[in-house]
Amino acid sequence: MFKALDPLLHSELRLAIISLLVGATEAEFGEIKEKTGATSGNLSVQLQKLAEAEYITLKKSFKGKYPLTTCKITKKGIKAFDDYVDALKDYLKPKK
Image (cartoon, rainbow, N blue to C red; front, side):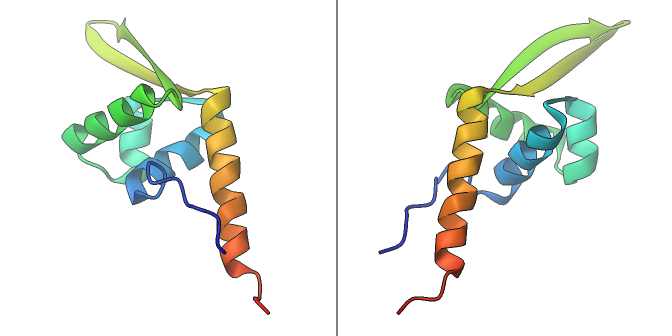
């Protein structure tokens, strides 16, 4: 039997966000938007879903006169990502 894939991370954009944050620990909204090619609205919704699951934290501040959102992965988010990767590896193993 295959391991279940985390439905929250089984979304292309949410998986891309978490993958980025695993490597960088934290990133600004604009950087994530640029690297994923997401629209501002879609990215905001997906970040909120990840934050509600406690996979990331969102810090709102200002950079000069402009709003700035900084995203940081949590320990729970790192574990969820590791579990997701392990589950995918299980799918790739030859079955007897």
